[in-house]
Length: 331
Image (tube, rainbow, N blue to C red; front, side, top):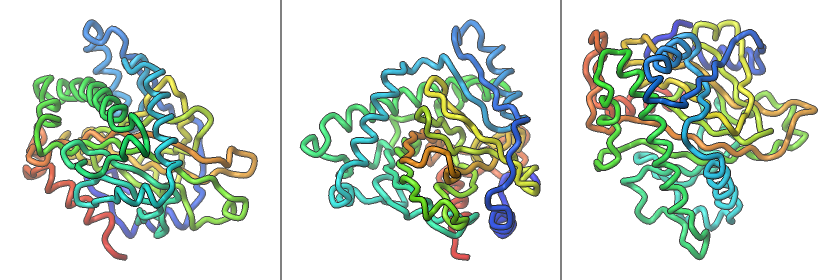
């Protein structure tokens, strides 16, 4: 399978189901990039980010500016939210068109044909009216999560400013395209709870915590809890061999990946690659897994057009609608 701006649905389904567990290789490096002294080292950091992104599409950043205590606080609040009774969470249901609210076992990946074994809660700033738990249900939740979302936005814009420079755009290019002050803002903070794996499910190849997929955004920031692994990555050019590499959790690092939107914006210079969350194997941690993802998605009215104009210009909202339709149509 070639790494292009879109992926063939039938091919991905076939490859994933034929090699459901896939092989693993430790030879692929997920590079760690230090963002400390960012202003003084920006050229060096930009080169490192670009090389890592072009090579694998995934990398980890450290010394990123979000205090570990803030990350742990966000995770604690995430766990408290998912511990609420389903009847309470159901008061804040997912609005698919706006990518906000709570859902459980509702996302069916085309690569597996079965629901991901997780629940999630999406936060997209302009569309949260009526979707926040009350302070009686979960005190401080809204303020904590909005503050954390803002911190994620800052880090994402730092990284994207490096890619803007490498692509020949001005360094504030992507910050303007992801302006949280606009009603068209559509970047999303997603809280994730993957359910504990019962023993009888270990042998089931038909169920996945998250089936193989690419992200639709520009850049994803993923926070993983220590000891709760499962994330694996496979560059698109290697999907035929199903050579998956595990990305071990490190609470000091943010795992980042390029999404389809930035791949198109870069005229395919930056690859959006496959990843999944596998079920634990015998002997591995079987308990619940929590993660937090920030999806930097350009505002709906931002125009995506690469420096070489390889693809026609398209509004980011229309582009996301196309990607969702292509990946979640009936099959």
